[in-house]
Image (cartoon, rainbow, N blue to C red; front, side, top):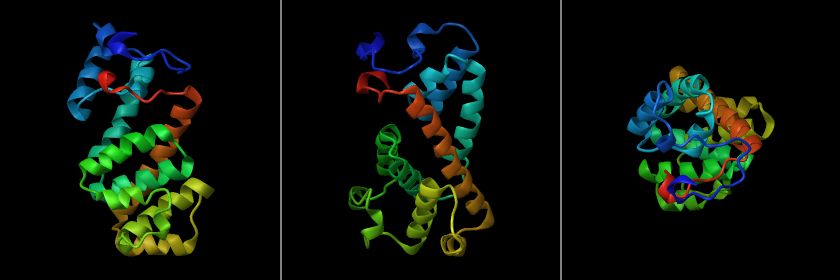
Length: 187
């Protein structure tokens, strides 16, 4: 396998950047690498259909780069979703992203039992409670919604809703396709 990567168990092949010379995929991969600093197996799997990957990246850019949520709140919402849905791929990537955003290690170590931790602010707890409840029930009760509404603007609330929904979408790609977590040499 290219880059010393184990063949893994993904249900579709990964299209590695070293195997791509033509457009449009070469251009999409170049954009991803410039935006994210590297390529991931999720993108490599979607590379089997470049236009689907392009559409995926449009929403991904909004959620990860153009979101009105503070980056730390965004990552806490993603982690609450990843842990509630039990998505190892997202846990690994977003623990790293949370560290990069400056979330203290003590907070990250409290997952999956963050609800028992006194380390989080009321705003963080409201955001994580929203993400957790949506992941568990696909809905949110009035009390949780009102708590999150106390802390966020309407635009931020919409971005929280979109972010949580986006990571449900990602889970629906990652699990059925049996994506492998990248080895350090393949990212």
